[in-house]
Length: 214
Image 1 (cartoon, helix red, strand yellow):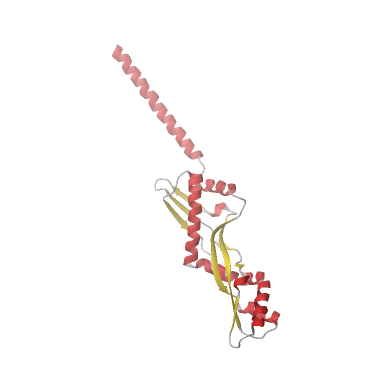
Image 2 (cartoon, rainbow, N blue to C red):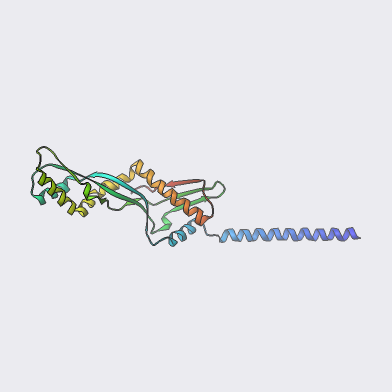
């Protein structure tokens, strides 16, 4: 009789254990369904960052040559007839637009600890020309030192126009493999920080897919 009661008790315990396991499974399922998706967590992560709509992913120092149109305007101001070549160094800041997080694609694989980040097409701010690096070389006839100094001085005053003139070359460099590699490296650092902070794990592998220019 005693063994029968023990058997009934064991049977009841098994039923309770199965019920608890089923309940735990349901709660885990609800928890998983309620957990924000990586895309939703990305949106929240972006919103919690300092107010900005652009993520700068690369700062690059580049030397550019001004266009013939710009040098023609410069020569007209100084009232000099000559053929010149103007070059200058400039800081170029490449960024990816943050204003619409939905334009980004986030894929998280916890099993392989892999995070994939697909971005909108990158862009750049107008080059910040370092006026002290402006160099002017003449083609053909030489210009006197005073004239060259005046040309550099006037070119420095035209800093904004020179920046706009160099913008096309900075944008064209977005497709340069070295520039893209630099941007991908910057995005990888950002992606690792996002994954660790928002998704709760440190990725072993980060895949960056930069959007193509339109």
